[in-house]
Length: 241
Image: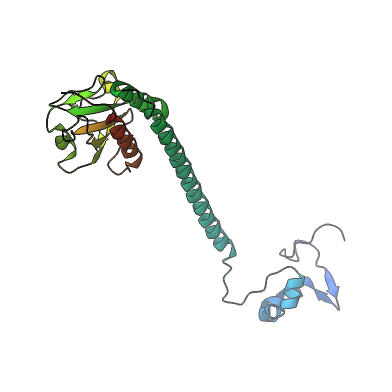
């Protein structure tokens, strides 16, 4: 006999095979349907014919469990990739900050310090610019921005050290690049600029061309670090009133 045997077709559909001892497949099939538990209890026979034996009330969850496991693994892999990307970005930002600090330490005077800060902000961090602003009264070095008395407290609060957020009207610190600034980071400084005089209120300001470049929930450690470098460098040269 050639061709494949469809065990689910009736005797009218095709010739009924004889299985020996006068038995036909419909008879065997009918007996198995009537005595199905006998077949289920014969685990070795089920394994031989390629079936997976389970109890009557057992539900196969293998595929669903595997799908859930794959989803968990994918989520963990995605979270790991995100952490790695953040770590690489932080490392790159720290490296650029350290290089910028070394560049600021090469400044020759107050004007050169302001120029180097602005160049580092643009060239190393992709910002629109950076500026140093100093409250009056008293002399204001060339290249620095002059602020009215009390302006730093008005911008940061009486005891505030930093402020990050959207650009606001009236903050004229970035010169020609002011139109590009969409968000800012402001850091308080208090350098001793005049011998025998108390420290003067001062700002180190960074401007980003992106609205989300600086937001209140961001850390300000790197900007504050650069501001401390600027503050200490500014004290190297006296400002005469």
